[in-house]
Image (cartoon, rainbow, N blue to C red; front, top):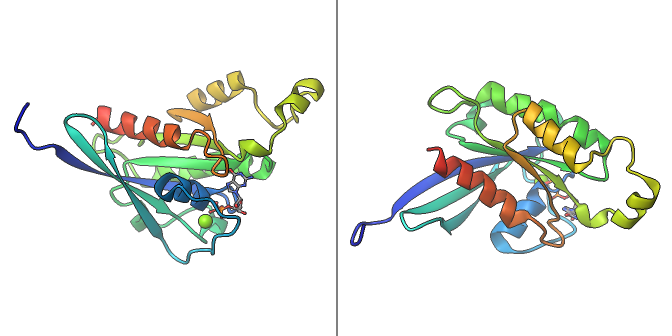
Length: 191
Ligand code: GDP
Ligand code: MG
């Protein structure tokens, strides 16, 4: 309604996944539109803020929490998850073991945080570093056996309760905004 103040909604999202998958790079690309070959490992937690004029009624203050440096434990303390309403799990398309860890990260989230109704919070899966894959070559030689087709990814997400997935590149700025938007849209719309 006219004259009515826009509602501000704070949305805390955690970004998890194995070391080196590009979590810090994704956050930096998304928030500061920057990419660097080297980020220092953050000690403790770090968060970045992006203000999104989401729609006519709502402005979203999106907090992206970076787990910097604690990836080796593959699980985070409960305190870190407090008030979290969404998650991003990242893996590196060129590193099979980071894909194998995806479900551990998902389980860690599901075991430590729930919505007010007691449901799992929405989590999106990002397959990062798509810029490093040679799709032509894959068409000719077939996928490496661990890598999934689009259909298999859809199936994987359905089975393990991810709201969706994107191939991303923090380096080339591919699907970073789209991933964040899909998650925020899911959170705000279902709130
Ligand atoms: P984190 O440990 O998950 O936070 O990963 P970082 O953001 O520190 O990234 C690890 C390394 O991967 C760095 O050298 C980044 O520059 C590189 N990197 C991150 N994202 C991409 C990407 O989309 N494409 C390419 N080619 N390299 C990336
Ligand atoms: Mg990092």
